[in-house]
Image 1 (cartoon, rainbow, N blue to C red):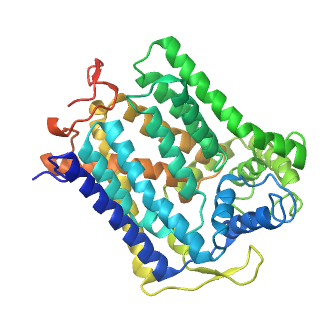
Image 2 (image 1 turned 90 degrees about the vertical axis):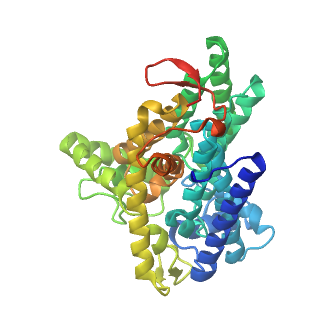
Image 3 (image 1 turned 120 degrees about the vertical axis):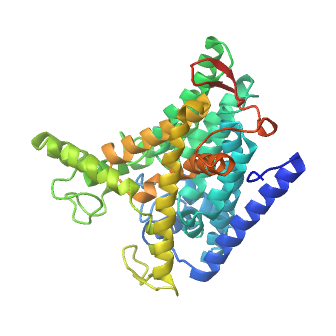
Length: 439
């Protein structure tokens, strides 16, 4: 019997409900087992939210443009109920669980298969990376639902009218204000609109234009705030120069506390980071190739950070001081994370053997996100396994393609039973002909 075979809509909903329940139980179970506390960047997000409520400004000690406002504003809203760390972690657990439904929706819509959508949701629900990271106060818990929401909207065959484009642009703008990497993903979203739309060229131009305008209007007030409150000339954030330096510094690769700018001056840090990084590349052009090599390795490395940050405890109120508080079976869990991550990468890569059968939208989506994520973090800035978190969420669909194909045929395939096909918009078949997303 095929995996996740379903004969009715009600059965499929029950299966999805069961998957969501499993996702919630796993995440709550890990949260109660590890009881993670915010340290490092996660501790900063809490302080930013507290200052919004108590001191009326966005920053740690003074107004700043180093961090983006999306996630701290979400935490500030949650703090209106309680400021207790367990409550804040529960909020991110709920967000991580709810993302399961969005993974299903995107998987179903972009592959044309109900079963692949359900399998993608199951992969996301049980993948240790996503389970262990759920109670950690990371910006990804807001960013990924926003990204998937935009992707689901632009992949809808029912998209009509200007309000659809305005809503998609608004969500994309909120994603930009949560994690700047949305600027890398935005061209992919616009490409999906352009290459998969059934509308006339003029209508697609209008839709793309409205989306871009909506993004600008959503992000614009934050840029104006930075120029007025922090310093003229600052746009989205001052972190870009720092990350560029970490990816192209002459004495090594990646984050370091030994930096060539005044401590605590993020405006100088951005300027000096760009200057030193560019000077290093001019003086040693081979540095770029070494940076790309190290960045690619960093992106693809095992996501051990999900376990590391789960067991750290703050020593003082200072952001850079914490110590480990190991949990039972931590070494075993580490091996599980490594093995699951390796299997995930293998299965996602194997899905590319079915490339010719992929619907056009899925091709643009997955390849586009993989390429822009690599260019942004491995080439322009610096690579770390955490920086592929959002792309890995979407790659759960590719893993599902492989699993369903192997289950059905004993080999890798993209065959979808006619009873499971849903309308996911136009596609290009293996010979380049355009048609509906059927088998």
